[in-house]
Image (cartoon, rainbow, N blue to C red; front, top):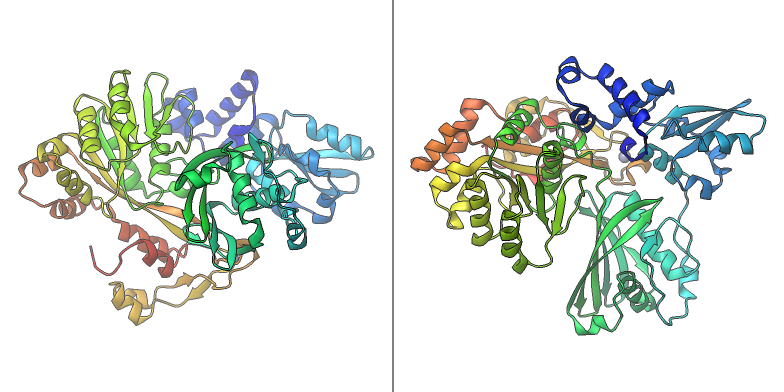
Length: 563
Ligand SMILES: [Zn+2]
């Protein structure tokens, strides 16, 4: 992301000037420098950077690469990730740079190709690293190398584990290669498991577990010890405790990726879950990238955010991207004049200007919130409302004039109201404080390179999923089972968020407090009056636009009834 490049004040002023010139008139006139900067998408920032420096900007440069030329480049020089030479044409070398003011690329080209002139084009750091990744072969050691390992003492401490460097020690290289591959494929988790005759790891990508990668069984304890050592836990610990949690940081081409480690004992050994807290591939800005909600939903969300105090609740199952959306909201709400505190488990996305706190265990929740309330907060982000105590604390914070963002586990937005009631909160308190009830899902997107067109939805599926006759002739797409090289054989590439919102206006709050209507009836009334789309509506819209298929949709949404 362009935000990762370092600019001095003079350079920043130039880019801001260009941003203002290229922004829509409404934003250019009304927004402060800071708000303008914050609201700008990656591509617009890139464009502004190009405009300010006269270097042409390209969001994507992979198609410009000459692989043979790229292979001659020195990997160590490229590891900085700030530039990448793409191709040579006669006496010119095309080089992609992230920071047009940085001379490293010019120096590199002129020192290596004295007869050539560098021609610079501008692109995002993420685009540069994707080119560098492209030329990498397999980073793991061979099976023979692993079989030859002599099992002995565990390694000395590694505070920041560099997963893109070549390690001498085969176990280190095995774990580094596994993690680098997981980060590259945007995996959310890596599972390492032992079964009777099998020791393997497997990635979870876009919500699905992939193929198992087998490892030699005799390395089971060695891999375990290596991981424990990364978190500076002596191996004796594993026999003492049934469950072990920890953290470490992986260094991926100079970028720090937070990693949460969870290990528990199993009948045949252990099960380790490594969660990658790497959100850089998710464009966490409301209205953009993965969070490109429809205009009406986004507007209602912004309206709820503009209310000075009250609760905004995001619901959905685990892995539905609730915290990504709430973090994007925090980014938008983040102003120097507001004191923002978060209580999370774990902290996933650190925002400059926000005070993040992590919850070590659930007993800390109440004392932490109590301490928050004495810390003069304006906005509080509470990871999750899970019991009566946390529900009461959230409501109390909102009643006393704070803006509270939180999540709750319910499938539908209207069930948030029911859940609060079940947790013992009176209706009038919910009515007074709840400003927006939202539900979210992450749905897989079809790989655009290999999706398969279909003339319409077959009758059986139409009946099963309550789809009208018009779907018989609505052209849709399906994923290709065997996928292609671009999607690593999955048929899908990335996910997008679907969001439904129930704005609780004073009138709706009034109806809610009176208790004449059930939450579901209130939801129906809100939809009737506002025309706001439900999760189902948004999902079907995505299906009709060819971006997802019914298979991906039915996995995250109950489509078997009409809402
Ligand atoms: Zn594909």
